[in-house]
Image 1 (tube, rainbow, N blue to C red):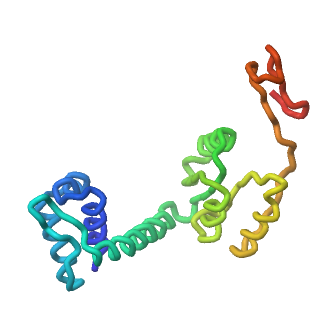
Image 2 (cartoon, helix red, strand yellow):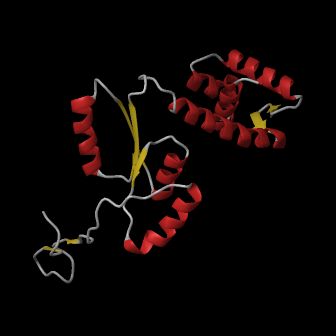
Image 3 (cartoon, rainbow, N blue to C red):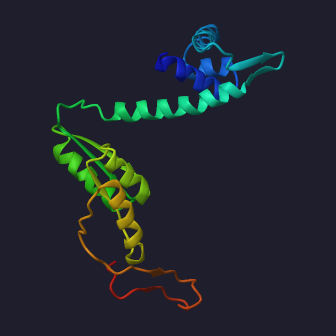
Length: 193
């Protein structure tokens, strides 16, 4: 079994037709049919029922689809870990932030010829997963005080360590139409504009 077969199979499942799968794979419908037939022969069972109205995935095909999705996902992760710049790759996972994006742009402007910078954004759990799996070298998260216990539990199970960089009070910006402000906007006292 080859990844190509699973990729073609997943495309047919997603598109619901051999023709549409061929279009998204930049190949021909006969080639897609050939690859799917080869996979079915290798597995010894039909993945699709061919009808006059098109194709329908079989129950066995549905099971294979779930496993194929996991395999293709993991193959993508392994591929993303490839060292394409002889050890000069810096990987970082962070919460979505314009400030971090600006800092990374400056970093890349200064060291872009020396390093490949890979940045992924996500929620706290996804960031922890990427760091624990070795996909990202560093993860940057913002954790509210009331989340620390849960966050510590996640880190413990993933065998990660958290180094707080700073503690800040939450900044709340209230717009001019908020009922408590009247006609002027107010800003929490500890926030800078």
